[in-house]
Image (cartoon, rainbow, N blue to C red; front, side, top):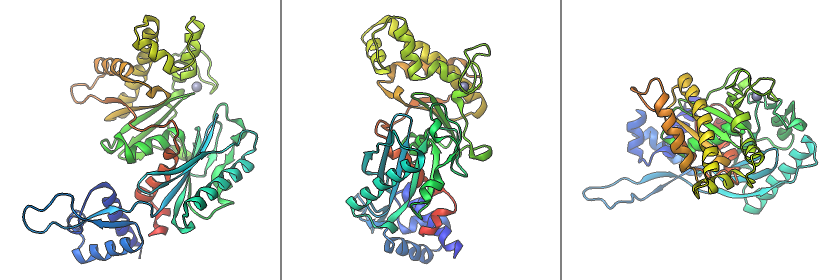
Length: 386
Ligand SMILES: [Zn+2]
């Protein structure tokens, strides 16, 4: 039984990643054609996949029908619980966002907040007519650090109300489906893995520049995790031994020099009338020398951090995401030039530095991607659906 489920899962993942026929799958897996057909028939019957006509007309002979994931068949719920907002939503298993909404949890303790979020899930589910057995799970994206194995949010700065709260346990009070929790940067990285640049790279690092600096390392398609399922916190790697004291207890953390609020605060202190990173970029692109120097300094710090990461992990790419995604050409060119100049192994390979291809502004997609990624590529819990 387990082997059959495992084969089902493998075939489902192949169908997600490639446009294939039954014969293609037999060739790719080494399974017999009758075995593949039996599994594909079962996946069609369960509503996961459908067969479609080949898009190109056959020039000669028969062209077999291709298999694709069926839209609107199975769904993932997701919620971003962040410092300044909370957005819940539902995507289908192809990643298409079906609907999302903001949830007001500002004055609520975690137990009541999760209850409000779950009520929102129930409303979304009812309004879209989604049967409960078609929900693959709930993905929860929170500021790190978080113990992804147990679901306990540890001690993220400026997020004290949620410290030491086991968010998986709270959701499990309301539902039986699988619940997964990731830090926000890893959620973005998994989103990128499924739908963005991550499809091109097996090894890359995601840096999320927003109110802080989040990070995630994807190695061989999987998030790198340490003890307690912890992700790397590159924002709290020091780049100045004698630097300013950070809230984490360290000195000179990267976050203190590159997070968006810090950049804006510094720009305003120097007399610039700006309220956001967007304002700085707009003025820089209009030729303001002071703003160009701020963008260049941001590039300098990020290039410094990226060089450290490249020397440790040797990734194929570093992907930047978050509020820094606004009109990124000036910043990216400056970072890439600096990285190319200094990287030790440049004769062998040069890592690409690029912006996320996904819009994270209204990002429930990122948290539903935790579920979708787990369903296709994770281990145990997805099996229950096959
Ligand atoms: Zn720190």
